[in-house]
Length: 157
Image (tube, rainbow, N blue to C red; front, side, top):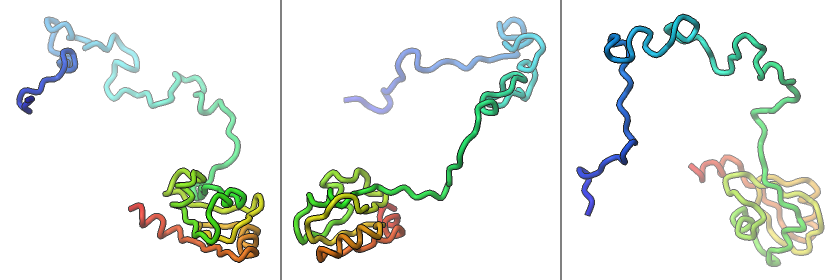
């Protein structure tokens, strides 16, 4: 049986640190591997990420378009016609939708859209509904219950 004190790194996994600036006899003396003069030979190396030596950097050459809101909410969309997979008079929650393969992630909120025709009377619990989807669900005697987004985030904590 292997013991902790017998563990060793594989050969070549651990290298000795390069010791520079210890005189000409060390092999890394005088300029210490930095060459003569120039920006990289100085202390405090002055190149930032994306610097292209005075040329206009790529990030500034490429045209910028559009806007991305940092407050955008992502929803998993489920159409009414795909809810026909559920049993009649059933209560459909995000867990049941995941089991049916209609959504993939439980931590991302679910929105029900009115695409297609619903043929069963069911209770649907989701985070958001389109107005037409609510009308279609209630027209068949079902219920559309809105789950809060805050409760969804608490359950994942």
